[in-house]
Length: 303
Image 1 (cartoon, helix red, strand yellow):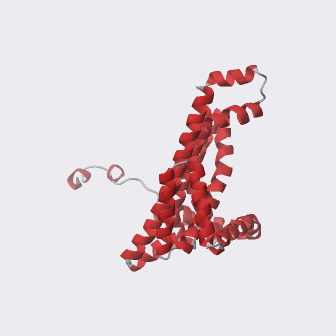
Image 2: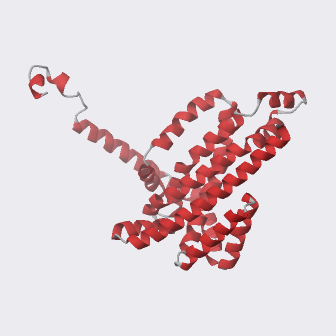
Image 3: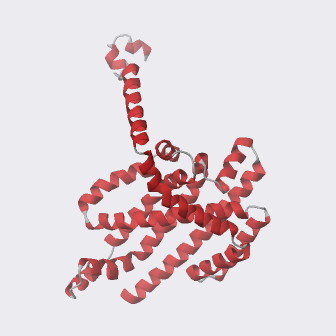
């Protein structure tokens, strides 16, 4: 190749990139402008995220300081109500007992609080946006590329703007997790509503249903199994992001895994990883079973 380039102009052999001086100037201008904007609105940002901080601290204190037997009984009851499967329920109880026996109960409660808050926020954000996409082709064409970027961007990259805007702490980690985990909630809500049978919608219109009544009484109930799949994926992605978010101050199992990586503690990393896997399996099996129950219910009513 060198011999070929010796007979060709430099323009054809060396890509005509912008010179490094110009790139440095542009990069510095953008970074300085972004930092200045953040500094100008620091107080407003603090007020905006304060409710998240309060809610997260409240839930974390509730989970950590409540008697373990109460939390375990509540988890088992929720799992049984959602799955109606005795094997999943027994597996949940045994997994949580095993987590407690190896001394990871408190860290697991902190992680559960984080994942719970992230999932609730993702649902509150994702369902309305998914509904908007399902009702507007223009909205879908605008939002889809944004979701593509959110899902393909490396998870570590989310931490850069989040830390610059919000600093170090639990709330920045929570926001990074939500950004990473919300796309499947939006996509599957959109998909579920779009897959509702057109004949059912025509029947609802024939009975004089308004747009809101059609959405509330027809589209969302029939799309609920698909929406539940979105919630399932959101929970899984939240758990996957917890370890990365521990780099900006999120505690719990993710911080333990990060410390195990830094110090090469195989046993610590394995035990905390086992706890994360156990939680993920519990959420996954319960939400899938609940989604199947909803699907069977829809088939009985409308099939």
